Each structure stands twice: as C-alpha cells, then as structure tokens.
Image (cartoon, rainbow, N blue to C red; front, top):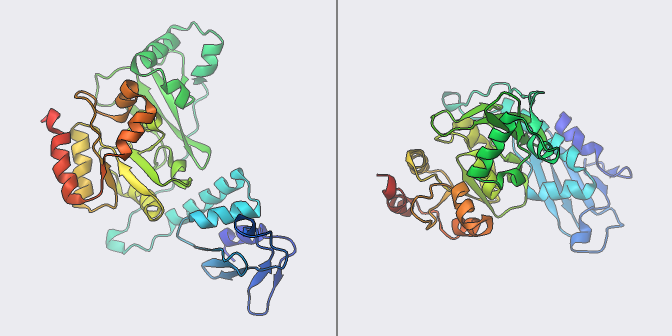
Length: 335
C-alpha cells in the first residue's frame, strides 16, 4: 500500500473489520451531519491500487481519493470527522503535493518539468514588526519601515506578521503553504524600480495557497502579495500565470470559482490576454473603482475591505467575449 493510502488506513477507527471482498467497515464518522451517530458499522471503505472509495449505507455519504489528485471537499470533511488534526491534515496535503509534483501524466511533449521544491527559512536577523512596535523600537531602519507601511497602507500590519531587519530598507512577507513557512519575499521601501520584490519561494508557489484548501465558493486571484493580503485572496506573483502555478490552481476550479482581479496596468492587460488565449476556466472582475485606483490594495485603502470584496464579486464576468469587451473600458485609463 502506498504511504499516502497507508496514512488514511492508519486513522480509521481501531474497531474496523474487513470482509472477504476487501471492503473494510466501521461506524461512519459522518452520520451525525444528517442522521443519528452510526452504531451498526455501516461505513465502508475499499482501498484500490491507486486510491480508495468510501460510502455509508446509512447517511449515504460518499467520498473518494485517487493518487495524483488533490483532496476533495467531501474527503477533507470525512478525514476531519475521523479525527485528523489540522497539523496532520496539512502534513498529509504536503505529502500529496510532493507526490503530484513528481508524478505527471501529461504527454511528454507538453510535460511540465517540476524541480525539487526548495524550502527557504526566514533569515534569523528579521524580527516581527508587531513585536517591535510593542517594545517601542527606536531603530532608524525600523522607523523607515513603519513610515513606509503607514504611508502605503497601515492595515497591512493587521493582515500579516510582517518583519524587518537592521540595516535593511525593506520588509519581509512570510510565505506559507499547508500551514508552514516555505519561503519569504522582501519588499523594498521604494516604488522607483521595476524590481520592487525579491522572492525566496519554492517553484510554482501561490501566495496564500492554503485559501484554496478552504470551503469557499469564490477565490480572488491577484498579481501581488499586498493585494492578496488586502482582500484575503491568493496571488500568482508574476505578470502571467506560469505553467507550474497553473498546475496548482486548476484542480480547485471544480469546487470553486476562481476570479482574477487584474491590476489596471500593462501587466493586467497581459493576464487578460492569457486568460482569453489559453481559454482558462477563470472569471475576471472589472470593479467600477474611481479613476487612479489600479489594484485591490489601493481600493481597500479608499473603500475598505468589505466593499472592495463586494465590488469584485459583483463585477465578475466569465464569458470570454465579454471579458475582452469589458477589459477595453477597464484599461482605457492607461492607453
């Protein structure tokens, strides 16, 4: 049995029993959602060579898993009903991700070459900005960071545990995946450069990736990290969505609507072209923000988080022809 499937087997109830046909049966842990708790061992699971299927003959709950895929919403719920902890679930998802990265059934001529993902730890010289504020830090580099953040958007400090370092004119944004830090980005204290960020992140990393694992109807996808923090969305961290990042996002389009909110600039025009040219299964939002507001972070600073998210969700469009048409007006201010 593959270690991933063995992990599932090991969290099954200890009083489980197996029939001659291979089905394992035990009290269904999910009956309480719709029925009284199961006491007659009506939950049944069958392990296959590359996955498993589960069904309950009482509450009719069904879920399954196949190696090479991600955990569905139903399977995640079932695992939680079995008693898996959040930390164990994150580790399990990381195991699945590692397997998926190393096993691709894409035809060789189109196959994405996935390098071993390098996890980067946060440098020891970086300190929590929140903790430094509480201590009354007087360091001039710290003051420069605070002045920049206050001018940019003071709410950033409430959305993430940003960090700073002595003799560094930047601040650090931690990057998480499955609840663990896998890298970080440094944001320079200036906008007078094309390389405002320096990323130390794994290949194919999606900022706020764990949002995709939650039971959400919508997920807003933006370009940069501070915009993602502003609306609690996810970010693709590039001018286009690279193949390795697409590979991480697309499996979730079955269970939720991915809505791209492009920056109102040339990079935003580029991502719209990609969505249309590649026929990606994403919606696009064109909120009716005031002239001069180019991204969600600026919108949140002007309107607040709740209205900004509302304006994005109520301005989404999935028809590719209408996306192309509406983008003309959206980008008209920069042409």
